[in-house]
Length: 323
Image (tube, rainbow, N blue to C red; front, side, top):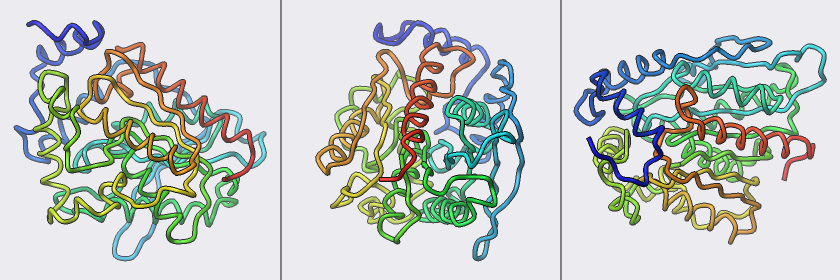
């Protein structure tokens, strides 16, 4: 099978492996089938597990529900003072993904950035449509921030981050923290975030088909299961790019893949943050597709991207204050 020549050779090799394994398009599956396939793909990534100082599963009690989370401490945490904290929200189109599918990435970020990490398994559609996910992520962030000392975390060094749908939720959580009077956040890590669910940018046409696991019709499949009312697409809690004011938000790192339907909106969000006076860095990864960030078992740029993300987190944490 021939692929677009712009696609990195390691990605085309991965495409061949997925085809040989019988991978099905997400949009051809039910939500439960898509979740199962996503978990199986994560388990099939053969790479050494990153050893941590401590990993614990727990749940946060919220009104009418419990929010499953996983807590990570880097090695040697016992001999250190209060550590910075990363609240991480996994990708998966607000429909699939869980604590296990993104376990390796969170371990790597915690280890490299020298921080505690809390991975949040927020509610997902279609069973729990918008705004369940952003409300869970904000609730979890405020809950942990209010108890930072209990977890050995420094309340002055709390960041939010996530990939894809998780990048959306990190951006929205930062906005909600500003609007609702806290918690104070020092950084936002946005990995190829979906920030405008209307899907109207040129990259949706340019990379609509043939560029990996997320095509234009895949985004539509996710959108239809996440958002019940089309009017909600204009709500900044769904599409943070549509927020009228982005000033006063924490500094950000935005990572985008060149050959991704979400490329243009990620760039647009970085530009709007900059225009609003928010310190922001934008890094593009040529030849890469959506979801590459978690492909450390097969793609060198996945390692580079996670290193870039961890380095940015560590640099911000070392400043020792929140914006």
